[in-house]
Image 1 (cartoon, rainbow, N blue to C red):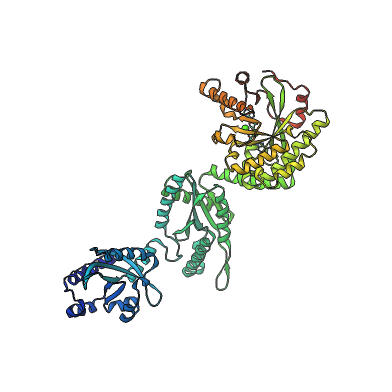
Image 2: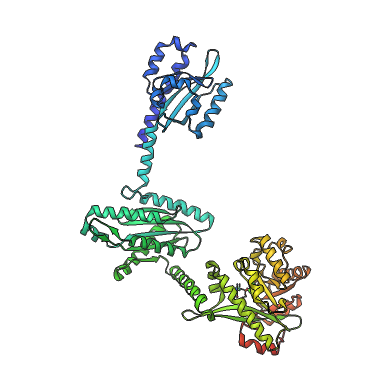
Length: 592
Ligand code: C2E
Ligand code: CA
Ligand code: CA
């Protein structure tokens, strides 16, 4: 059908070209000499005009129909005022060139405002002629508004599902292909959801097809309303919908969206004399894990949907499943952890326990202090290492409260040790980015440590990556902390973000070399050279070098030889419970 319209337009254009040719051959005195022409022109369904000094000199009858204005009105007005603002520049350029006498044949589309306020689409062919000894524009304008509308309608019909007004399966597939390309080049994940309404056949048997259609329409509309603008929804077939979530910041966000979709589908729909509630089975695939192509993602989502449907049928309620069982489990676990973390921080603060790992002076073997490392002893999951929940706490913002709790506990321990006469060692506390930048951090730490005379017994460890995030703000905070008397250590140094330039911006007392360097320091000369350089860099910047993750005697000896100031690692001791620290304080020496 589109081809037919294009063909039609081409035919008209051809006849316009012929008319133009005839006009060109007309004599100079346009109005008097060409009765034949003006009769012909008035018969033309296309608008014909002669334009000079920014006014129409001649216009045919058809222009009245096209513009809604009479010939007299048109002759009096400034024709440029009829143009759509977006087309103004193009036309202005053509006119200017003509006014300079340039011979210019132009073919272009433009829009003019009809007297009734609506815009009409025109196809215009024009050229320069000489009229009364000066250049003028002559042209033919064809109203193609209907064809354009039809084209739009056709494009709509070929990409949309008539019943629901959502995209159809083909279009959804094409969109998915495009969005996968985007996700691939930007390195983010994408989700595809296959949504199937449960027992839809039974509904049709009970209530008939018209009701079935009505339910699909309502469901489709509600889903569309619920999704974000960038999300894409379509009807795959019958009672099946597909949703693309094109950019996933966090994979577990899919669960949230899916749960919202389920509650939307379960919302009762009112029919004439009753309400009906639906349930759904949903299968989810994540690019790139569950398929690299659109076809695979769709196919696998359907497989996952069928698994969900089996369970859904048994349990008689909505169910969603990830194609990849492992991924699904991980996501489920993370969501559970998030909830548990929140409750634990509100109600069971005792579940968070500080362990202390010794930091040793590598030159003398004397204990320097401890790094406080948090563990979570949860009834359900057992003892969780910090890497299992710190990141979650950071994502949810819970790190602020958790961080406060850790500082309070550590300071409390310092007081207890002090009362027992142990007060010549340092305690290092890790501070997360959000925590450091939270509004009341400085006030909080000042308040919590107000009974601690030597503030430099506390070292605040911040990771290298924090430094580059907001240089100005971070510098202010760190300077303030230094002024208050705390020591600062830069943690995980050398793990990728380092721009040496930043180092001169911040005050710090320790540079903590990441444990990853230790893995091959004994047999890789380059690693050894890098570590030595970092140690020297640290000394040249008037700070001390600390290395973490020493596991063997050989490593400890080498680092001592490289002149590294302090070391930490399983070779000396694993992180210890509070009540195990005292033994060490009584005999604070290690063999190197
Ligand atoms: P980190 O600050 O780099 O902490 C050092 C990690 O290396 C600790 O893991 C420690 O147990 C481990 N480690 C120590 N010696 C060795 C060794 O010889 N070999 C090996 N392979 N590992 C060793 P942990 O306790 O699981 O902590 C992991 C990360 O979690 C920490 O990395 C830190 O970024 C974060 N974290 C731990 N506690 C806290 C805390 O209280 N607050 C904040 N904000 N983050 C914390
Ligand atoms: Ca640390
Ligand atoms: Ca570290």
